[in-house]
Length: 511
Image (cartoon, rainbow, N blue to C red; front, side, top):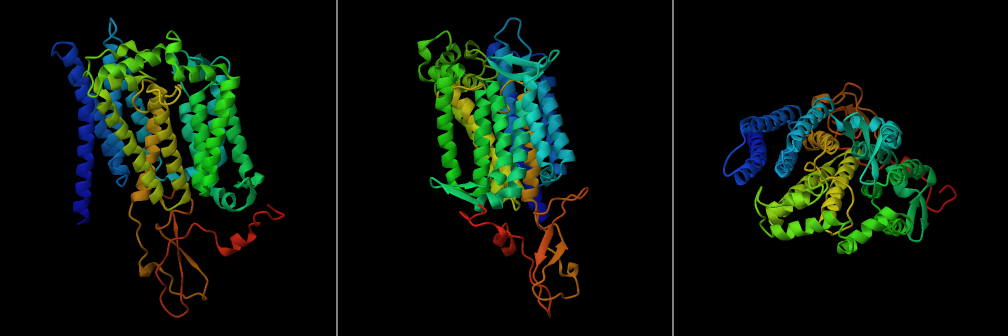
């Protein structure tokens, strides 16, 4: 029976991936059919074969290495990636001679998939990342500092977030958000009990002790200051929201979410009054027609949505190339024009499914590090989609973020496939069956009553894995003095009473 169920799941996962690959290839072919009177490009079998082979090889490696990984993540990503490449290729045809951005994006996809496969092959257990908390913090800060270094730092569209080495350019902040998500999750896992219990109440909000919150708050503050100097408004908002969301998940205190919203409003007012580029963004959002020369891209995007209507003009039949930087920041406007609002909402639904599966894995995780990491990555991914699509549609002020898996750019694509590799590994550990310990594995000697016996078993992921071990865990069992051991039970997240007793009371002298 288990083999039949496994075969059905494998077939369903493969079918969804084939469907996603077919949609991307069909979009690429539709561009040529609509623009060149039914003629296909001479090299279309090579492009479609490379695309299909890339997806199938990736699925096979993931299936063999991580058989219990969430089956919807990989098809969702290839669907988004394929539509993005097709739209970039369509925009290439608007120039004479046509540009080669679509081909370059396909090559970047190959490199990004290589990064994904490296994570899948060499990181079999996400809990190994928990060992290196401060190393992740140092690496994240180093990545954020790179664009400020003279000689390699490069400014584009008013933000200094790029590094350039010869003809090669990269945005290290895309990788830094994943690295710092791991660092936050690791630190909060270690401190979640004292952050939730020990501290003082001020204005109805329970604040942790400074020695517990101080290190992570200091590192977060340094990260935010670096982003402010880079004038990267979108990434600053992303990092701040990530910090608040992960503390809320770790402590289960609604006051942190309320405090975070209030601080976002306060920082927005401060930025509007003190920073010119923030004021320009807000004024462009409120009244873009007041300065058509400055806000031409926003106005063009609105006209594109109006031209596409509900069902769009069709692949290759619209004029999305009239919107500046349509291949990167405004690719949602290009898709909304040629696929219509129905097509754009369908794409947003794929993003919603992707985020929902990550949150489901977070809820099902049996250890706090995986729970926090999945929740943090899901939140930062969803917030990035909301900020960029909301900015293009004038729901929120526009910021310079990319649309994950769809916008042109190698740094965004590689970082998002890196994130996908982490999520596949995490969901594999969460969804894999937990074997129970057989009676033969218990010790024959009966210890004293009340003395817990720790038996190695792959049933609990609360213990960090040892070097070279794939799934070292423990099960705690209660024993009776004269009889077989009782059923093993999984360790609970709460510390034993001795630990609770050592924690200072809220408002006490040691708080």
